[in-house]
Image (cartoon, rainbow, N blue to C red; front, side):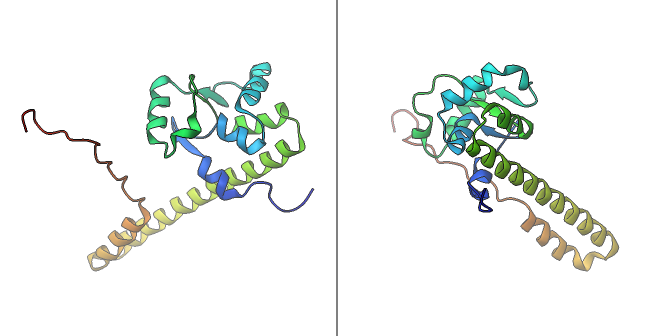
Length: 174
């Protein structure tokens, strides 16, 4: 086995979503990473369903699926899918390695686990930085308030841009 990653961590990071306060991966994204069809992945999971309790894997509700579809940049990836996807938490992804027993699945799982660990470390680092900033802010007087406010603003993710509605929405008779 080589030391180079089968899948770049950036690709895995881009596939990780936050749903129901959990970091998850969609069944279709995992299937692409593993090099199998979504149908094959889901069948393997269903044959081993006892390995996947609800904190390892869950299916999106119709409403969650609709929201996810509307937020998706490219709709072609969703194709003609009629049922909401399954999503897998970090533990569910780890369990997949016992269900999809190929060398590629093992190598991809290793990279996914490393990515989850790296994201967790980044979040912990961000929290530690925030705590230190709070302590410094309490220690120093108001003259540094502007500096601390600017740093906090930089730490916040940018606000989501509102999409402009398509078409004309004026009053009737305009």
